[in-house]
Length: 303
Image (cartoon, rainbow, N blue to C red; front, side, top):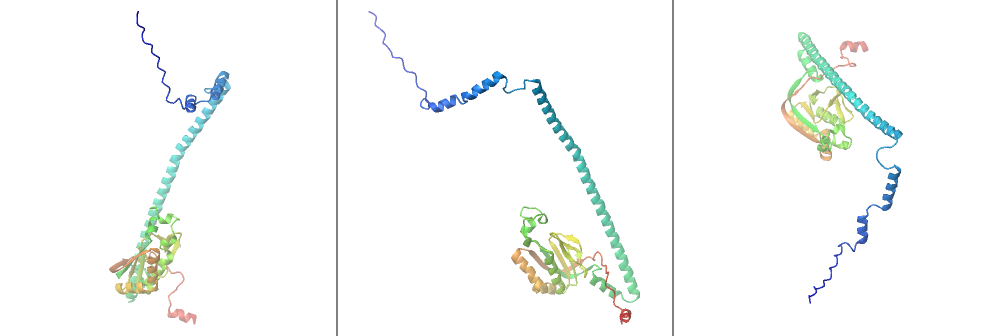
């Protein structure tokens, strides 16, 4: 009798690892809600789905919109192309005009210097004939009409470091965020100059601008003007006089102490040194419109 083969129970199918997470599994397997799918199917059935318009009117509208958009873009590009050369041309014309006016001003200044030298020579010759050449030289020095040199002091006054950098490396004269106390002002330079005059200076210049009895130190915005010419820091003040005595007397004067207070309280930078020889140019123009020389004839006429 043949032996029956052993009966083996069929092994059960292994369960899914995520069988216990039926909710998450359902969400992952059916990420799109059936309602959305049915709505999309109904639209497709009615011919309302996405894609190109079906009717001729809709197609013409779409084409017109595309043409209008292309026209706007094209016109904008054309205007930009036309405007750019015009702006560049105007800018170049302005630069050329500035260059021409600057050259003209330089030429006029050169002519003024030549005429001034001619007038000075004629004055010296006339006074020499009348025996008064020494007086003419003295008058020229005191009035600032003559370039001078001699021993004296050099005083350099500068804005605070924070003011010079503007906080972000920009020009401090073009920023408004920095406190004004860190910058040298016109009244500060007025006190410095007056203090040097009172201490015995015989001639003074600031950044190459010779000061006279008619000179004015004013402010225009954040810039300091000397005789209506803007100066840029640092401000270099040259004064002719007895160097050692002039420097010590200025530092001990009320104006010198005022400058020292600016250094201590507002970080204004200032250095003073004695020089064996400083050179000061002549003043650009010395024109007297009101004062007249006093003579005996004038006195007799008024008595």
